[in-house]
Image (cartoon, rainbow, N blue to C red; front, side):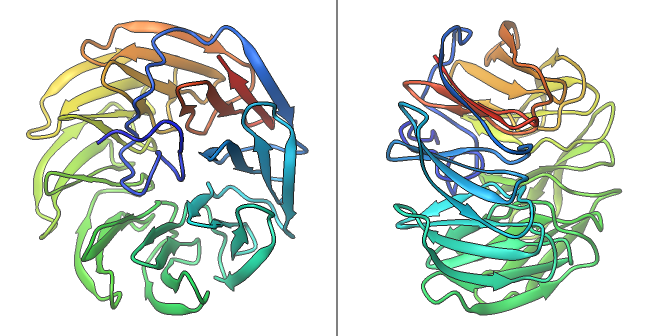
Length: 346
């Protein structure tokens, strides 16, 4: 399933969270359209909706910029830094900060609609399904919040920090934890449906496709779990741990490893389609189209590979580490660097 490239409303594109895009990105971005230098670093990923780019910053602000000109439209100031990628649901933008507060603000003005005090830093991106906001925080609690009212519906305590952005299906919601588990909870009640225990932390955000939950772990393995039962369907070992969340395009899943490789595996059985060397450590999620896979590296580069073969198509260096996911739209590539520069490139 490909993301409509005119809107990119949450981490990895939309609530399907597969990182698929219709934008080509087959050529290296050679023209700077605009850039904005923020007051502190950026570890989150920008999002795009109706001609506005939204990004959180470690200065504690959520910014809204005109996607064509880069002009600031508004900002929301919070008391603590934010590493939470915003999510857009209708008229609201949702994000969290290191003080453990989840914000719902008006998309057009930045006016605060409601807040929830979670008690632990929120590094995840909220996800909305059927009028409910799902998110985890560093106190190990996963929460479901009523989108309209801003009230907590249920909570579920895990045994570790939650840095994994959830995937919400119709009946179950899936996420990982630093306690080494992938959880599947009933989306209506928060009751545990199943729990898979990996050998180390699961900080990646799972993708769900064809009845499989796809996620990597710091135990050097990438897993495909049965979405209904949590049973292991297949697993693939990598050279080091996996921090990069997967992207799915067609019948292929792509992800980066701390061993410096980009992997392309068959969704059905985990068979390796290709493995290509990148700059070094890879922690950001890739973005995958039908022809191109793009990924940002920890050491300041953006790299594109041919989706079918893994052949490198281009690379661009912007300086400073890159820990977020780029937006590939039909008109531009939007990306943020850790030193706090937001770029629009063509």
